Image (cartoon, rainbow, N blue to C red; front, side, top):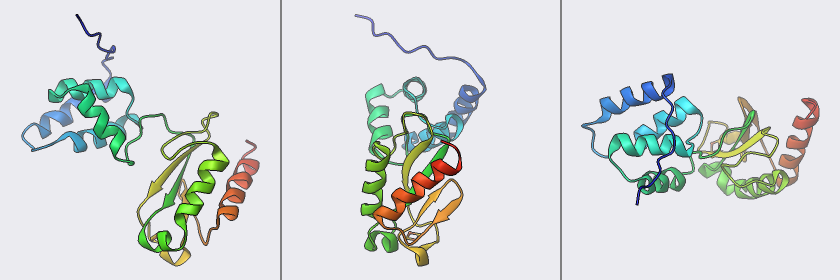
Length: 166
Ligand code: FES
């Protein structure tokens, strides 16, 4: 039986990705590097991009899928207009970053890596971005918000929406 492959459009991003893959051909285990490059180009890793990478690297789609979904720095859904990065570095972790993250996931009704239904926020995590004195901290796009509690993080999100008319 034939397995149908998703349609793979030819555009500049696919061309750049193919060129990058060529440079990685002799690197052992290039999959993570290739997926990082693909995410940089496409913003996330949709199914058709995973299929393209699998085909170019002679891997099965399930191998690519399991790597793309195992690491939380890979996104398999489109990103929103604003990215929230909650720091899970050591200083933030010991000061309750997980509570902040859980509160945001609940407030936004999405899991980590997900995007709100209106495409406004994507919730993600990061390792130390150098604001340890403000732990626990998060960034929304380039702006840092520190000394957070679960309630304060919820308020930041609500105010952010209000201030941008969303
Ligand atoms: S550990 Fe969170 S900013 Fe450094």
